[in-house]
Image (cartoon, rainbow, N blue to C red):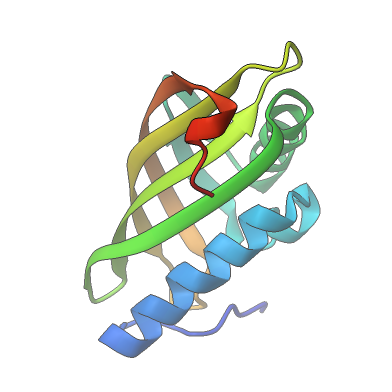
Length: 136
């Protein structure tokens, strides 16, 4: 059975570590690498998109990073308990037309006993920005 450390139940230290590992993976923009952090039967809600399974999540990420260019993400631990973590995040990206955006949101994560994310629920809002307003 594959394991993704740190494992739940989380402490402050291991929750912060889990968030940093997720940030690093997503900033790699490597759908395969990112998808391996999720259980085979993971459930996602990303904005108004609902996904079931690691393969759907991987395909979603492949499509995402074809549209969201120059992607850079920052995550922050918001809360944790047992096998759950809540984060706030912001990321910036540029569309194919050159317009920059900053996306803000919150995610709720639930992990199985092997440290794989079973559920990911993300609420996200995008704000058009000027390149001079970029922070990340």
